Image (cartoon, rainbow, N blue to C red):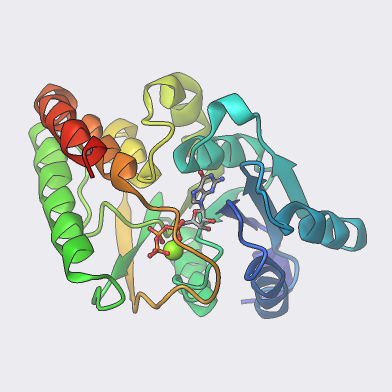
Length: 250
Ligand SMILES: Nc1nc2c(ncn2[C@@H]2O[C@H](COP(=O)(O)OP(=O)(O)OP(=O)(O)O)[C@@H](O)[C@H]2O)c(=O)[nH]1
Ligand SMILES: [Mg+2]
């Protein structure tokens, strides 16, 4: 692929307290894919993330940081806003902590340029997750797949993935119409998009090895797990209430 093709893509990086990773992530993406745009969606980080990004932004017009409204905090809300702010025909969402290998983006871009509406990064193994998180992840995948299948929506083998790319116009329409129904504080924006995407959309997958976080700390907690249940319709909502009580006692 060449620089003008890379210029058709924006990478949306949702971040919260990623001072240990963000500079390296931006320079890695910039180095691998010259011409690519980068949108950092920050939820009022308390560490040095914002200063680092503002400094890069002042030197590189392809990089933009948006510090979000505190009352709309959430990874899903951040990605939804990033999609609305994207100015290129395609975008890719990825974590800023190197758990998603930046090298995989080229195959996502290739599939999008070849006509896929949505390309999902599928984890080939989840060894970087603790046993408890692997069990949770597999259970959430099962519930979400059941929900999507029941509603006639496209499926993926990794609905919980935080790595995916899509067509900007198509997703901006989804966010405009349904963004208010997304589980905005949650982590699983891909699930929200799959719920509302056209049933005939072309969805494809690329496989990748899910690594360990490079630096800094995880922000995943019990309330995020509860929020996945809330995404699974009325029955999931009932389970969510029970789970919320269990997690509140921990
Ligand atoms: N904008 C925004 N970004 C967030 C928020 N919480 C986490 N993030 C970012 O979303 C990405 C994924 O968050 P992580 O904490 O790594 O979650 P995870 O990958 O499921 O957990 P680990 O496997 O432990 O790293 C990272 O780039 C985080 O900085 C949030 O509330 N708002
Ligand atoms: Mg992570």
